[in-house]
Image (cartoon, rainbow, N blue to C red; front, side):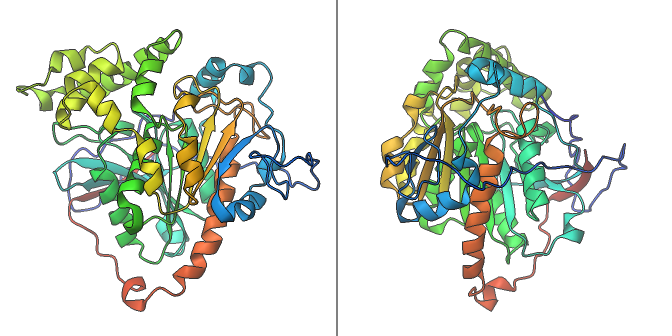
Length: 437
């Protein structure tokens, strides 16, 4: 799939910062922004896919949004245009998914890696844009990016979102789960769709480091599922000011069943292979694991279900794979979300079936807004002004939404008490800084 060169892992955890020599100079990042909309023709018929003020095109399905729906949609200028998938490639969900995975461009950007030691002695890698500590004000809004299954900061869709947000003056950090993005694994436990401990620690760490900044998060696929579960469980105590979920599987059981049908088996095998490759790099940590663990099954898994049966569901205390998938579904978390959340799904997503989208739950929660595009595949969305190989159609929509929230949230930050806003950041123990590409 389209990814940047592998990142250098943090080989040893050490409290002193270490800087590696850059291997090359990277070219400047160029972002193409959507054209300004001067006029849009819309039907006079009002439906659930159109507001009474006509800000969106009827080719898109819009659900929920509460009383702030019109004001939000007014700022999402891309929605006033019809969703036009790129000819041929954008007409088929499978073709679009594969094209985006293998042929989407990967923007060049220099990153600085920070390894965060978690409470259970595990490690996650946070990749920041190198130099931002010198160039950005400490109160700049912060965007935490959560890649999909086995993904990391080198993935094309992650890089495109990163450079777009950075071009707007945002501080961006990619949260690489244990073993992903060439990050270290220091305990015999990876990550799962159900485990929110690392997410909590990352958000708390970033919030403590930048107490004057508003925090936001964007998640894709598995990362979106984890993000929405986090929002639901944290509910009223969530440290984020807003979030975006893209290509969220929502229902683990339906997604598992869908992956075992027809051409989708190709994705199942590819995702299982990605999990196996990460596992084999750290296989020594899992030797002599007793109990219900089936290490040979995980090491040779041909499907995600086999990998989860041999390792994941046992690591996180589930009785069966189906028990794990059922209890890892973020659709049940929607009703508990108490911050602004935008969900974007493609109706023809071959991996995350549209039947699993919790439309009613989103509609009932005034904090949630759902956009469903007629095409897009899984993490594809080869459409818009940057198609064919540029950023996904969703990127300007996501950025417009986040900036809409930041304009509102920044007003509230001014009233923050000095006792909270003027905290000084002390570098926690167990961190390592490393320059990576």
